[in-house]
Image (cartoon, rainbow, N blue to C red; front, top):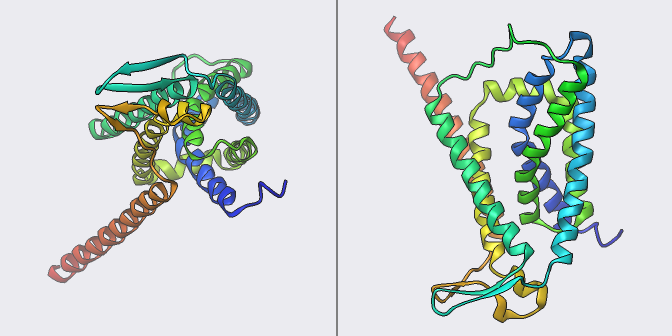
Length: 274
């Protein structure tokens, strides 16, 4: 237990909680909308049980993923395309590569969606109602789909299961308490969703970097590290990742303050002219 109470684990837990919150925005929005399809008297219970079951399954999925990474540490095959592609490929390598590509694709797709769609109106009136159980099952299924990006992102930060599980449980508790409030806040402050998507892009790059030495670390053999055109794929350091996140936050805060200042100056000019 004492080994878990370190500054590094605390920092990882805080970052994981933030990432779970950022990556859960769309999930919260979906839960808020989908729960309204249930009978009015059951909507609160549907949100509660949908989130509870989904979070429990997310912890199980995380546990299975970590176990598979440990059990399948030995490389499936060795790439030996000298000067082009070299190194070992194991389960971790595949998970990190596919996960990194998936997360980058998701972030780029969502950024493109935000640029192309000016207003998204979720109109649920006139649609056929569903039973509370049907809505809970739908929420659980979609939550598991949303889980893959958050779990893969979490594995890019740390592989300590208690820390990962604690972050998921804390994010689940936050979803229970703040589902409606967070949904309304995000709808009114879309810039924080943009910030989250760019952090997601960085996480995707981190995952791709982690794929390089995955087989080498598992087998304690540096010759198994992935090399592309003779250059070894080196993972991004945690300090670089945290620095990039801090810079993004700083830019967002400065930009928001500058936008408010410009808006105030325009209002002052208009009132002066009037």
